[in-house]
Length: 198
Image (cartoon, rainbow, N blue to C red; front, side, top):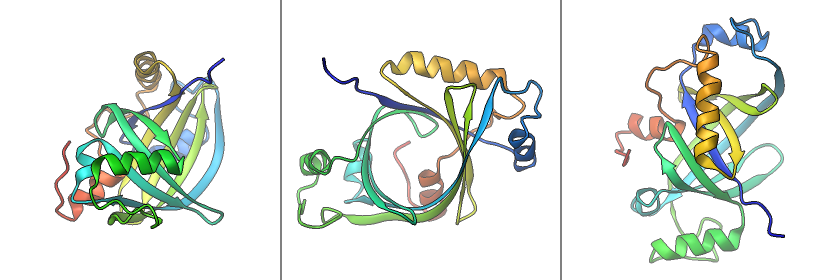
């Protein structure tokens, strides 16, 4: 029997810092059916590309480093945009190499970053929650002053997962703001005057 192939389905959202304490105490109206604090992480993300070739093809190659490890990961956009998206993710170096080789002529398998240029590098502090026994809710604060939240599900059926996420967020409008949102990397690039494809 083949293993299930799960996709990361996510929706980004704006949150008011003044409401974080209410979230942490599950004191909103309505309250979450169940809310578990899952700890805080700190990590540094370094994104790699070559003349925007990967990003223009919906591929984001990053190395995430925390105090214990450094993991190279490729996120391939299946659908969506910076605010509401589905990604196929892998940390398998052979699969990552195959992805890069398909798009970048000066691919160098011997180098840790495949000979690619650094597109962005920033630090993030992340607060992690599990809500209603199912949804990962994260609040990210970057070292360049940007904050954004995400609701995530790992799922085989991306459309059903997006519907679940939409219903979940609509149930708690006091926290999940409907304002236009911007992901960390998009905000980093915008602040440096670099245009993105979305």
